Length: 346
Image 1 (cartoon, one colour):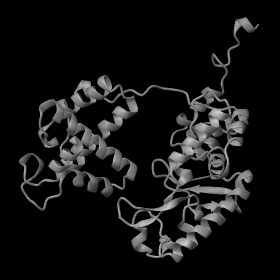
Image 2 (cartoon, rainbow, N blue to C red):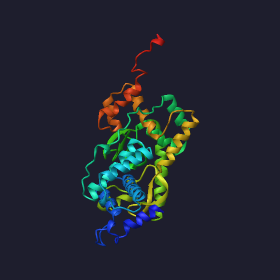
Image 3 (spheres, helix red, strand yellow):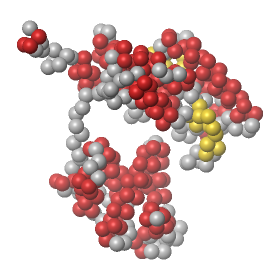
Image 4 (cartoon, rainbow, N blue to C red):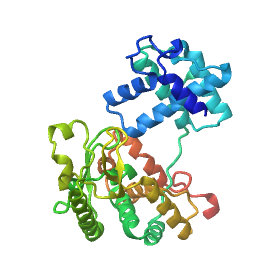
């Protein structure tokens, strides 16, 4: 109910706190949405930022008994909200920093105000944790307990070092069977990179592409067959969204409405189904470690370093900007105590 009242207030041009007085001026959340899209941020970032801004306004509504426009608030109000998240909600450091990013974006790019942070509104320090890595045997047991499409995607995560979203967003044109490589487009940090295509997945991947092609032909016959294209490619090449090369390797089972354009088309597979499948397989394999799809990418990097491959090569395959990010896997390789032999074992 509070969320409904908040949205109503932000969309109503009449109350002074939520309007410039011009009925034609965009409302606050629409302004945020437009600013995010101008900067080509992802849909997930847009959804996260809007959610944090709503929570920020609801928090101060609960404190004061009325909705306050962000223009009426300043750094102490942001600090109070972040303190609430850290102390009352006990959120992780990364979550707290994401909330701060959303609020700074609101003030800088929508309200055009620079917020001077006090000493108590500093970025939360993220704990430095080593990644969870499976042994080769554990990885085999995990993959053996998966079947069908989920098994193929999991094998790609491990065999090519892909992130979950990189695997799901893979397009037909970016799989090169002849050169045994995968071209990862618009990865983390909007960077492209090349990684290897494991020979072991080629037969299954060819079968998956045949199924996806059949599904695409059915969509075309029903007047659909369009797929999302990045940036302005859809306007520059009006027919490209129907071409086979642009289709997703792992399409969704059902058509859906794009939340930005409103067009009905087939998106890629849902990440949640693969996450559940990986966790279920880990339980069946008796693996006590916390395992998710990203664990397979960690294992890919660690096993390559174990095999003697150069850390710079692994860095390029993973798409890390800084080699220090890749070096965290060298800590996983070391035995306890940085390879020091315990006197108890002498």
